[in-house]
Length: 288
Image (cartoon, rainbow, N blue to C red; front, side, top):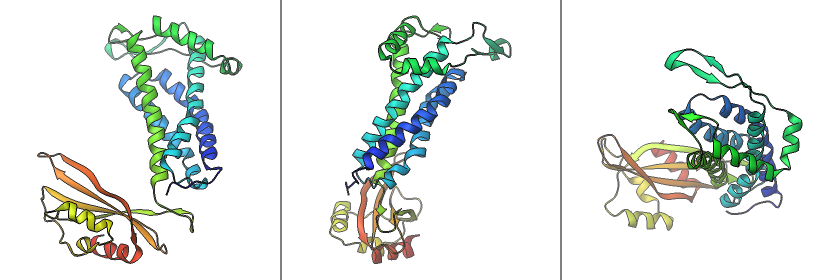
């Protein structure tokens, strides 16, 4: 609906900031001690999931029904945690041991560099943005680790940092967006249940005409169409957002198309259109 309570965006910002700050310590240690470069790609994504998972309740409590607003303020709040992560990482680099810890031998040997953090140093650096940039510039120039025998620095290091940043912030923004997009009942203060209607339906000859009928409130095709026989190169599948006692439900229709032996493309031909409860109950009875 795009509606939101006056305190809603602020609540999203504060919750995203708090939980990104709390989880930044765990993420910084995970990045530092992670021996697998492939896992490093997953870690910022997992961190983003943790932040949104812990703070997405603010979308519900703040009554924010604007996906763009929820996404934007979630992104703004998480910037604080991301900034703190870099401060923690720099402090770990400053206090790292000069004696690496090697586990295993030969090609399977894994090298760890022990380190620790000093909370007073972290507090001192929090307000020293220019000092943080200067330190990261030196790290970028000289590098701190190698990849397949090559010293990582310069543009390659910048690319890795940029990739980490994008993965984290896109994850946060996307999941806040999807949370605010989900249909919500203001009366019962609950999100509507998402129900996948697993029975596939055949695709009509003129799909655009069918979609126009949907928008006009004519759902007779979905209620009367025969289930698609298997296998089918094309079929429709429905998702229903429904809650007992609510006057309205929301219908999403997806078109599945076979693009090869084992691959299928999916696109939404209708996304969360409002339908009366009576029609929703008929769909549940027919297709669930």
